Image (cartoon, rainbow, N blue to C red):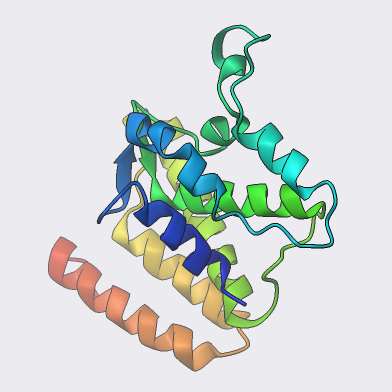
Length: 178
């Protein structure tokens, strides 16, 4: 079974060749190809209907509510969508289509990547609320988030290596002390 990251990255690649940010317009034009990558279990009778509910335009609605729910889940900011928001929305959509509130990829490193993603998104939202210039994450906040994930990890050495690399990158790129 693929991880949430692998499936989301594959779906992201249909509209974004490279990079962490994509235009909302291009994402909108790629909805059918993105929807095709949401896993639908063969035994989930309501899965296809749920998938349709997430990706269809609502002609009966007005304003923002007309847009497909998935486009609202990706939290566009100034016409741009960040991969972390896309990944989170993709996971939410997958759980909705499967008819479960549980993480389909829970456990081990796969679940830990989801925890890291969600923590970085929360940090970015708080920073945007404080400054109002868009979601951004300082290098030291990334290192701190990696440390927190490592302390609760099933494989702390994996995260320790990433943490060291992020610390070195932060020090080189931003002049932070390692």
